[in-house]
Length: 463
Image (cartoon, rainbow, N blue to C red):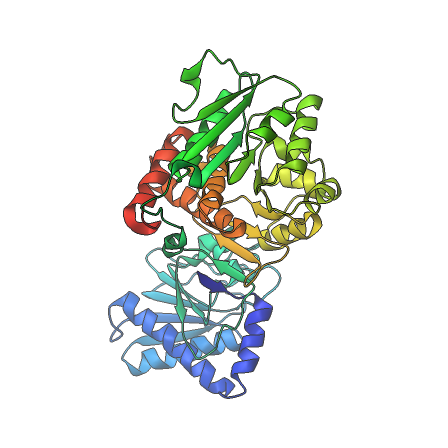
């Protein structure tokens, strides 16, 4: 897991570092790191043409130091004032964007850059909000970004993720300390518990309550997601389902017939040997379903993943809080933006970290806010209280992918991960699996097998 420092945390880390290292030395180290990346991009320095767009602050000073290093190594360097440039920047091989750093707030319209000019950003692309990734003006789009000490939220969220290109973290002697945010990576999937030699199917059993007449596909996707993510047993309950139509459901799942109404007690009885419950996909929103969902969530003694129509049943954050805080086991909420707005009373906005924290604090639940960068927040956590996954992509914007994700998270909980970690790693493997599928026309039914392939490739533990 990679540390991610907010702008305030990075400022505090800088101040701590200056107790033993001068500011001038930190700037020298940062500028040298930028120059080394520039040389790598250009395949050398001698005879290369470089422009440095430098502002007045330390970001600009980093760029000026880099300019000096490159000039001494034979590059032809010119330093441009970051004040508004009317002429396009061309006639160079590389532009180093050192206009504004993480402290910038407002709107920045970068100068036009001629075709063929490569761009290297210093710390964050100028004009990008270091905490949120917002870029309301016209920032430069970099091929690479050199940032210092640790990643910044604005490099992995929103427009910042699109502007930063390949990100390199340079060690300049500033210690990240105890960051409140972590970014999960492929290597973190190795923490997923394997299966012992003498294990059995019930050791990682998952209960799924999903689907309804006409929405059986949601239950299929959720149950298949759980199975392919390592649930040894899936008990599947679909209210009102036609028991004579087994072809609509995964053959691996053991199905529990439910009536269309008043099914909560039947579900509660089936949970005895399971280790996690996922509830919500495709259930519907009529009054009887809402009542049954609320009864199951309130009385369930297992960790619960609450998705889709079950989120609707929770109504709003105060109502959800009363139910969730009375429970001893964790509840994971997985809203998309519309569901978030209904629960929280307003849209999540561009700052996904703050949005996840707000709803987690308001409800007492672990909250996963879906997006190209997914943020998972816990009201109480040992270590970072927010975990990010930036594995998402537009190919996941198709019906049913969230149903698969709910099953994956529940399976990871059943396998032994703490729910916050299960949610973050579930989102991560969900995203990277989609990247290995069809670039066009990927459907949610493709995902379970792709997820199993990723977990079998050595990134998800053994067994």
